[in-house]
Amino acid sequence: MDIFERIAGNRGPLGQYSKDAHGYYTFPKLEGEIGSHMMFRGKKVLTWSINNYLGLSNHPDIRKADIDAATEWGLGYPMGARMMSGQTSKHEQLEDELADFMEMESCYLLNYGYQGFMSAIDALVSRNDVIVYDSECHACLVDGVRLHQGKRFVFPHNDIDKCKTQLDRANKIVAETGGGILLITEGVFGMSGDQGKLKEIVELRKQGYDFRLMVDDAHGFGTLRRKRSRSW
Ligand SMILES: Cc1ncc(COP(=O)(O)O)c(C=O)c1O
Image (tube, rainbow, N blue to C red):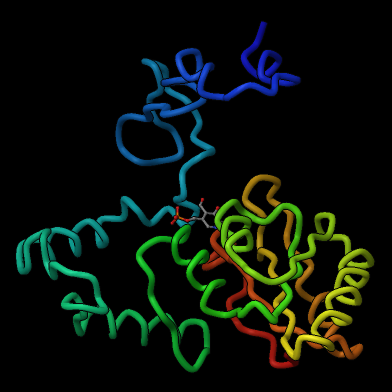
């Protein structure tokens, strides 16, 4: 029986399958040069699972920049969290360049997507706020939402009517708490490749729904249109 069939219907701890899954479903080892084809268990395979959409990771200019940086500063630089002792003018330069690229006023750079989203959600809401989010949001968003001490309502993936229903529910609550609504979705959903319904969501604002919007664009950034909507 396939491991997925055995897991389906089993309510016990998933760890019991780790031996079967290790090296295949979990911790798979892709070897060779990063690219569209890599070696997996001695076979050349097509790689669908790496975050190299723009094909830049192995670009000679990028590799050279890595080498130059390591030669100039060493791999340990700058030694410390940015907030404490690790801030550098290179961080600031990258933030300025990313903000220009996105045509935004400013940008804040975080080392990891996962922790970045969890902490950004925490920074954006108080217990008086309500979060409304898409059911297929990435695990980092779901974990961020779980930390939220106020109410949270999920809507079925990309279902704008159900999203409106949840916004209505959220509205009733914030009318009492004095908080606001944070709507969370993605630009391109990582597992299905669907695009988030951002136009329709922006349209809801024009229809009078009041909320702030957070978009995880891990899979859309740089691959789709980069200009922000002027109508927001
Ligand atoms: C949609 C989405 N958001 C956030 C993350 C987390 O990013 P990171 O791997 O940089 O922590 C991922 C990772 O795959 C992702 O797919």
